[in-house]
Amino acid sequence: MQEETRSPAGNAELLRRMDQLAKEAADLKILASAFERWHQDMIAMMAQHRELSGRGEDLDRIARQIVMVSLNAAIEAARAGDASRGFVVVAAEMRNLAREVQELSVGLAKNLHSGDLRTTATFQDLQAGGKLMMAAISGMESMVGQLRVQIG
Image 1 (cartoon, rainbow, N blue to C red):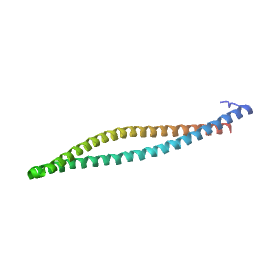
Image 2: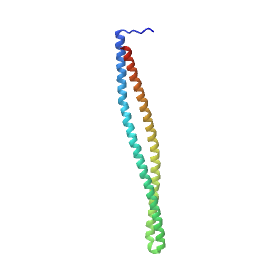
Image 3: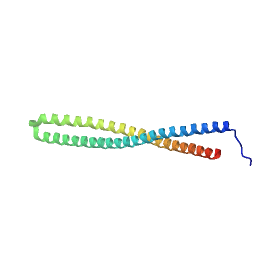
Image 4: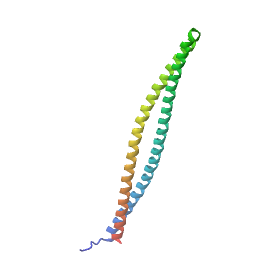
């Protein structure tokens, strides 16, 4: 097989293009480091969502307990008769507030679940994009190395 010969000017142009390709790969590495930072940020966001979900579950548990306490208070007030009418009103108000807290807790849980889904999808996209970028960078660097060897 006959080796192709290039003029010095042709080799200089090829070297210039290879240097440009190497620079592009270096620039992509900077972007890849941003992907890694975003990846770490997404991990932190997912942990924060898990923590908030746990707090939302705690809030719901507390609200259910308040409903039970207010119900027991209303029962005891009813047993006490007329002397505890004011306490019946307080117990009923506590029960209403506890129900409002439960509704807020349910809404919070739905929002957190939706956020978890978006965060997970974004996290997966970042992971895949970062891997694709690293593969492209590796391919570019390999091509530059092979071309440098061919030029000698």
